[in-house]
Picture 1: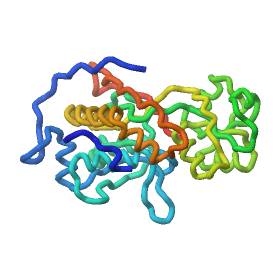
Picture 2: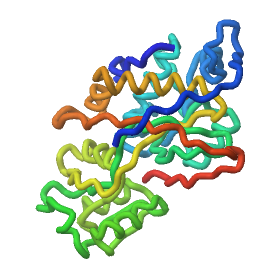
Picture 3: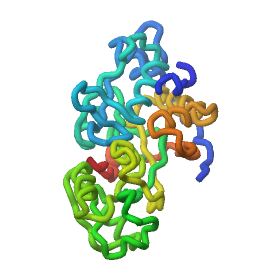
Picture 4: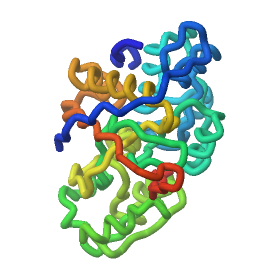
Length: 298
């Protein structure tokens, strides 16, 4: 598996010490050393667990049922790099975060993406990344006159319930007047109708909603947090981790990551600085380790 040519698809940290790996196993005669990659090649498609409701990240389009967004393009690029020849090599299974992770554990999907904001290992699951830096930000109406977070003091701001966004918004002292909805699309509807003054969520998602609004909405760019999105992989597949990290590092360096970002979010503003991959967390009891994952806004 070579270096990821992402363009075809549309704070510093120390290098991770090379782990001691178990003997490589393969399900094919010309195996890659990664059971997951061999399984994908044998099946002729990549089965990706994701979400279907995050514009700019991974959203299923109405009408044709196709997926679009940064995670979707990343999935297609991984499938191409693995060597799949099908022009449409990725099959998506959309579900909640917990269901996606359980599907990865059971082998029903090969990998998972979709605004996963943790790199802490879980039973049978490890995480690679971040492949995209994100920050909780604010979406406002372009004609609102709001240019800073300070202007939202005591004004109603919408968040998606049970994502942790409300707590982060209050901790940043933007406002204590928080309105919760079950879906991000409902927050956007409330914002457009003037029932709230802003919608707070990951900036990658807010840019997607702003793009759909065609200039009627804008992201303030205040960056209330510093987070990242990760790829979920089978924990025991050390070779898969190595190859994915090599692919991402090359994409960050050769400009293909920036080109993909521009293809998704437009080129009106320069692409942000690519992230720095985090070292794999070390755990002495991976079978009993649990991590808190924050569900993304829907």
